[in-house]
Image 1 (spheres, rainbow, N blue to C red):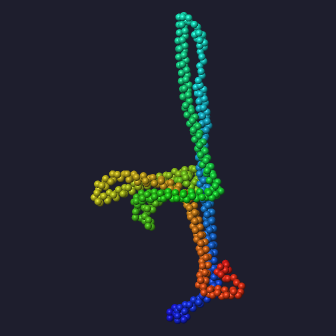
Image 2 (tube, helix red, strand yellow; image 1 turned 180 degrees about the vertical axis):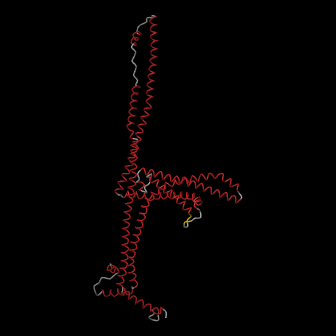
Length: 484
């Protein structure tokens, strides 16, 4: 007896199926109201649970957003304070070094102006007084000679004397003009000195005005940051994102430089510590090369912190100037020693490569070409030694993009976390609404299965309603409202 024979009420399977259909339809019809309530209650429970979860995620998003805003404004406030402090230091240096010389400049300017005024007074042209004997000559010239030779000779002598006197007067006038021109010529250096002093004063004043303009702009941004305005938040967010990508790009370049440095010293380190020794799955020589590079980067970080270029370690920045200067020289000394060691390792690497090339050439029987190749090997040797010495100092500047990357990473992660929480809250809310309307869909499907008894019920109630007043129908919406 098969499993299907158990459900056969009559020998005909079609009739048995119809009987089971009517029986199940009747059972489902009588269980219609409880089934509707349970379906709607189940969908409402899931909807409320997902809605509560979405509200919790939304609350977490708002808290994270507020925290990101606080961190962003605090970082912007600190950066703006540093820029304002630096501008005030520059203004102070300008006032101390340049404007402190104003008394000397004023005295020098007064002296130059006095000299110019004296020279100007000396260079003024005073018309000469007419000689006193001109009236006498005029009276004598009015005398009529009447053909007297003596009077004519006297007049001729007077004429010659007048010509000589005129020549002497002209020469004297030219000499006086030349002296005045020389005096004016001596005034030119004083004018140039005055112009130079005034230009220096104008440059100092312009520098101070420019610094004051920058300070005013920074103070405006600082006030907006203290108020926590939306504009300041947007500007700081965009600035943090751009700084994140720029610093990440620079750090990627620094990683490339570190890899080149690792290539230069990994092979000679294998000759020093042994190329067949392993720590786990890593060679000891490679680990030693990586440790040397990391120590160089650490020394670079400490050097930048001691110079107060970066502020990753507040303890170093809080040291007094004496200890800080000592730390600068100590870290620089370590860097110089490590750079010299790397240059020696690069030289050792080139020697090892030359030995391998010479050995390979001898095994091939081509010793002449190996000797010819070694004639120009000093170029690669010098290049490798130069790279080995310069790269440690180049890695010092990794501290600057590293600080920017660390500070901007917090903002970027906060923005990403806020976006993810918002997406999760939207997904939970959407899923809850789907379950809510899915309950209605299941109720309608349930009624679709028992369409026969429902049709019969509607037919009977329609006939009864012709004799009695109409009663309110029990619809799906009524069931949903009753369940709600």
